[in-house]
Amino acid sequence: MATWDDRTGGRLEVIAGPMFAGKTEELVRRVHRAQVARRGVLVVAHELDTRSGPGRVASHSGLEVASRSVESAARIPALVGDDTELVAVDEAQFFGVDLVPVVTGLADAGLVVVVAGLSVTFDGRAFAPLPELMALAEQVTKLTAVCAVCGRDAAFHVRLDAAPADVDDALAPTSGHVGGSESYEARCRQHRAG
Ligand code: ADP
Ligand code: MG
Image 1 (tube, rainbow, N blue to C red):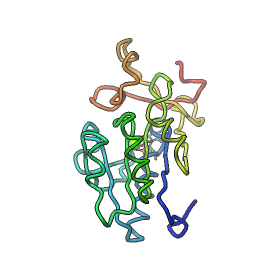
Image 2: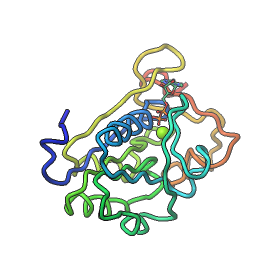
Image 3: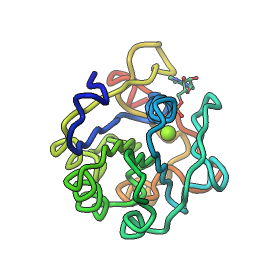
Image 4: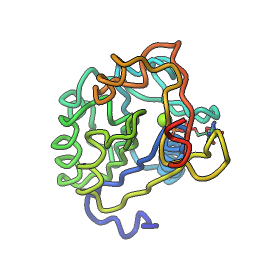
């Protein structure tokens, strides 16, 4: 793991995986470490991410950190202050492909940018913009959850109440996150299909 001392320039760090993999926990852990080191930190969430409540990013296990919510990736640079050294973005898939030039631009400008998001849809497809961000990052942390059926490492998650129309929609940026009635489970490859 790189330390601040060898972060002489900007860099992009990506935290990817299915739901329940601990992506937000890992993002919050890195933010807390930066705060202990008295680095200027900006945490960004998407306005559509209503799960954590406004003004904070929270993990399933209750770890949380204060955040700013924006409606689109284009709004992020204006939140970066003179003292900002680390920008953390959670639920990257909400922002779609527009996030790619924004976060790479911030890294090019010398900031450490940590982006967490779903790399896979609930029907097992690669989920933009995570694949592109993973390709362009200095460091990628790919996390797995625990399969709800067998306890093995789970690189996928399923939506238990998915209707055919939902599957058509699985690649939409907001898929799997907005609304309350859906239920999801982490699944290994073997148990992904039932
Ligand atoms: P993510 O952001 O990847 O969705 P979070 O960081 O919000 O994940 O939450 C991770 C936490 O979720 C774990 O530490 C654990 O407490 C809890 N959890 C619930 N279900 C599972 C599961 N199936 N596999 C792993 N962790 C789970
Ligand atoms: Mg999360």
